[in-house]
Length: 235
Ligand SMILES: *Cc1c(COP(=O)(O)O)cnc(C)c1O
Image (tube, rainbow, N blue to C red):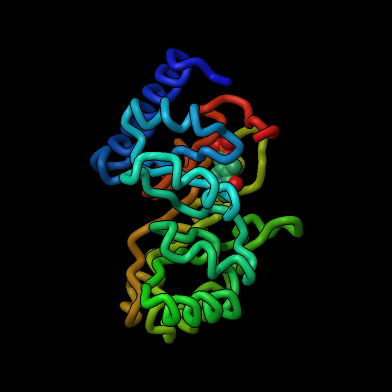
């Protein structure tokens, strides 16, 4: 487990680099949200990060959110960033502020149905496989607008933006084109003013490439190992 001192050092450094990248791209530091990714990290580690100011975190598994959330301070908000199976929708609705990983109309329909049952609304991002990798979830860039328009017809599901998990690359510059493509389609859809769609979140960039992502317009970056060190798979 990471020490408090090391966590503090990492966290501050990533916060500073995020702020610097925002400023370099002509935005204010508060216009880019740093989402610490806490998957596989222990409750104790999350508590330390909370003491350092973390009030929002990203997890990729429904089960892990359901285990951690009840034992952590009530004002720590969770985002689901990993793939969501239809049979887990019921459990996760109402537990997270934002679901980053909606990649099909069928999944959005399940969210709609469960949201109605629970009397809730759900904020979601549409996940795009912008690097066109066979191993990744997400819709294609070409189909994104059509999918956004389809989901927009569901009254209890609100598309707030787009998300991608870029390819793992040795040099983050290799992902610049992917981030540019994402920003392009984000602005494109924004300009169309689709009812029940607010293109306000562009979630892209991870430990390896978040500064490049911010320079290409990301306003939410998901950073795990850069803050918490190696993942703790025994959790
Ligand atoms: C794990 C994960 C991250 C964080 O990855 P790091 O390389 O550790 O920063 C970001 N986004 C998603 C969807 C993830 O699953």
